[in-house]
Length: 59
Image (cartoon, one colour):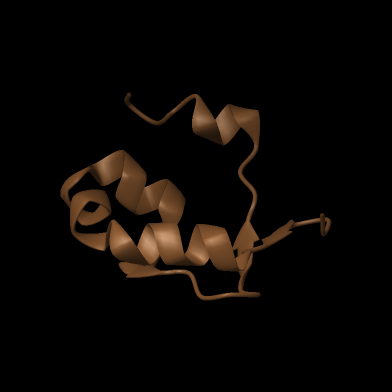
């Protein structure tokens, strides 16, 4: 894992891409799992969020 996030694997990139419509419908999923409204691609670095920031997300 990189200091500020992790590289997206092929499996994760494909799963998020296949679920893009569902992820866009939920504001928390959109914030946490998408990159400016688009799914992350293989080897993109997904930034990691601190638990303090995560606690402000409404589940």
